[in-house]
Length: 230
Image (cartoon, rainbow, N blue to C red; front, top):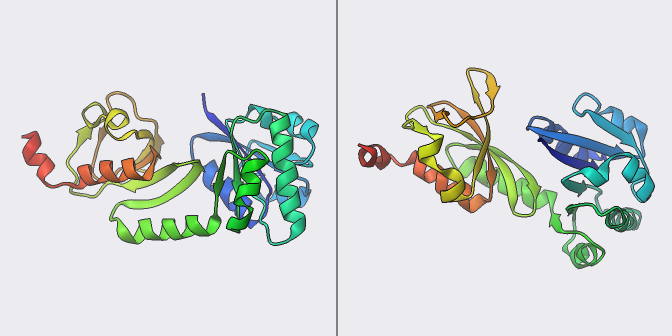
């Protein structure tokens, strides 16, 4: 069953988040009270709802209570948006949302958001910095998409000289706490099965924490791996 992620607030950040999530193997629910903003993501999502996010009944009608993760993406550039974020979190707790991730632009709001019910926080500015660092600092981490808490989905491109290795031999879940969700080969997006073998040039989408992703990446890139396998 696909993971369901609800994104509340279709500002520039929320729209970008919806577009990024739509390219992954998840179902996205987009919520905003502005019909015109929702129209901007209509082609990327199956479900888009005009809804007051501070109204628990409206959130339930939109199916947000069924989501595995809910991301509140309002900025806090004025007091009105801070209030909306807080009231939205409270409404989400009333419908027993499973996991609530809230955008914060100012660390001074962090304690408040957690106290009223947020499970985790994210900063667009920190994410942008980490994305840039990953892109310039690693030869095969192309991009990443934050999901919730410490977990993100990382897009990795296997180099042309990587030694093929089967998913079973890699044992990513047990060794690195990483799950490979999808891979792209010859322009086709596929789900790996137990017989999947990582090949040079594969684009891999892997879910995990950054530390585990880095350990797996270094193992795959290690030229001595071929000699050990022999």
